[in-house]
Image (tube, rainbow, N blue to C red; front, side, top):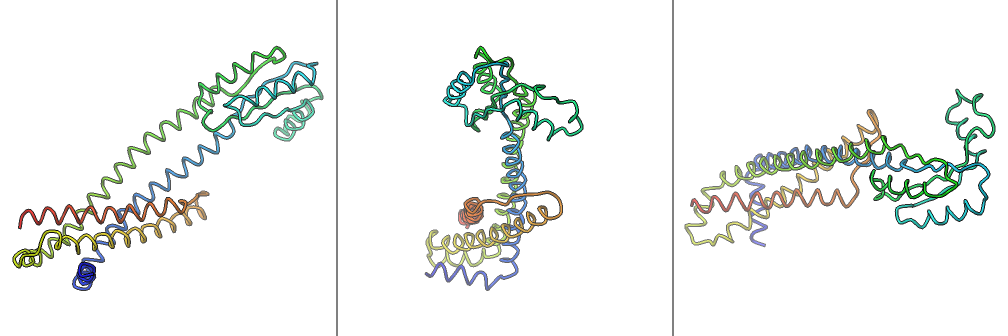
Length: 281
């Protein structure tokens, strides 16, 4: 209780410095949060595009319905496959006319073959696995051709891999900068109370007793800074969604982790700064 009271008194004794510390933490985490928001929406956009990855196997004309049904049942049992649909010639014609109205007069009845459309599990949308499933489907005797947009799938995989690598690198850079800025701010607060620490040391206070108020203060500043950063990030998300492009905000679990991250940074920054100062006193 004494440590908590001392931490609260520190806020009252130096309100301007406390506000500066909270603001610095808030804007450092806000920059990191904006990056996280961009990374999250890029990831979700790529995931939505990847849902369109499918294999289309064209069926030879005159194939018996029972042979098609047996093949579809077999394909559905593949571990990579999430859904199998049969598209008749009539359905293929209607879809082509709907999606390409400018060529409506070109498509005649029987112009497009029937097909088996295969959707894959999210983890099976890598080019190698798509190629393997495509080759396996092509072994059925009544399949004339198999298409899955090989070049498009490979480009999509490259974009996802590049985005992942760049995201991790920039995320670590933003996090490192945030930690450095926040640690410097907390160190300023510790130096401002260096005389108080020296007096406490002189009267026999232990290092643990001296540290506790600073640790609590850093923890509270981290939480408050995290709350402000989260609100600013949410406001930015709303403005982007309304005026620029549709965006999604963090889930509740991710937002909570952001607050805990702010608290952890405040705690670690205080511990390191006080520890350095105590070694010099």
